[in-house]
Length: 437
Image (cartoon, rainbow, N blue to C red):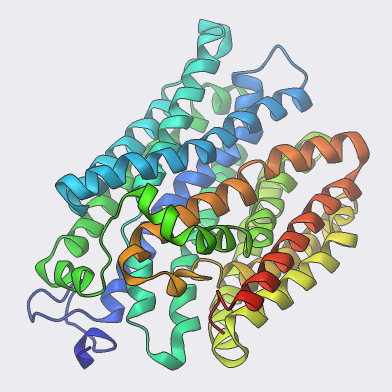
C-alpha cells in the first residue's frame, strides 16, 4: 500500500484533487455518517420515553405505555438485518452510491414521517400502526447505511495504531447523544407541557431529517469518488451474497456478534433505560436528567478516545475482556444509584459512560480483520446488525420490565448476563484464534 493511502493529509474533504486517499479523509466520512445515524437513534429513543407513551398509548398507565413504546423501539433492530439483505442486493446491482442514497432517503423519510404522527386521540389505533411502520422503515434503512468506511479505515490504519483507528467510528454515538439530549432538554425546559406535546417534540425529528440530507451528500462525496472506489476494490470491500457470507464466515459472524454484547447492553443501560426509570419512578423533570446524560456522554467521548491507545498497548481482546469484568462488577451495585438522588444518578451515568467508552470504543472492529478478504464487507455489516439486535434491541424493554417488577437489582442482573456472554465469546474466540490480539 502506498504511503499516501495510510497517513498523508489531503487538502480537502476528499483526496480527489491529488488522486490520494488518506486515513484522515476516511475518518471524516466515518464520523459524519455515524453521528447522523446515532442522532436519529437518540431522537427516537428519547421520544419513546417522554412522548410516545402519552401520545400513542394514553389508554395505559405510564409504565405499561413505556413498555409498549420500547417494544416498538425494538422493531428497528429486528428489521435491520433484513435491511442489510435488501440493500446489499442493491449494492451488488447498482453500486454503493445507489445503495447509500436509497437507504438514507428511506431513513430520512421514516424519521420525518414520525414528526407528522397524529396522536391516538386523533386517529385511534392507526397511530400505533403508523409509528410501528415508521420504526420498521428506520430499521430497514439502518441496515443499508453500512458504507464500508469503518472497515476501510481499520485496514488503512498503521500496524501499531489499529486500536486508535478502530475507536473513531464509535465517537458518533456519544456525539449524537449529546446533541439529541441537549435539543430535547431545551424544548422541554422552554415550552409548556401543552405546547411540547402538541408540537415541540416534533422539531428534533425535523432536525434529524436535515442532518440526514447533509450527511448523505457528505458521504457520497467520499464514497463514490474514483479514488475511494479503487481503494474499496483493492481491499476487496465489495458486497457478497448473504447466504455465501454466512456459509463461509458464520463462526466469525457469531463470535463478532456476541463478543461485544455487554458493550451494546450497557449502551442502552446508560442512555435509554435510566431516562425511563427517572421519568417514571421519581419526581424529577426530564430536562435535568437529559443534561446529566449530555454531560456524562462527554466522559464517554474521552473514554472512547482512551480506548485506542489502551488497545494498542495491551491488545483489543484484553481490553474487551477487562471491560466486561468491570461492567460485571458495575452491574452489581451501580443501577441502585438511580434511586439515590441527583448525586447517585450522576455517579451512575459518569461511571457507566466511562466503562461504555472503554468497551464500546473497540467493539466495532472486534473480528472484522478475521474475515477473509472476499467476505469482509458483507460480514462486518451482518455482524454489526446481530450485535445490535441481540445486545441492544430489547435492552430497554427487558431492563425496565425487570426493574419495574423486581427492583433495580434485576436490571443489574440483566447487564451481568451480557457480561457473561461477552466473556464466554471472547474465551471461545481465543481458543479458536478467531480474534486478533
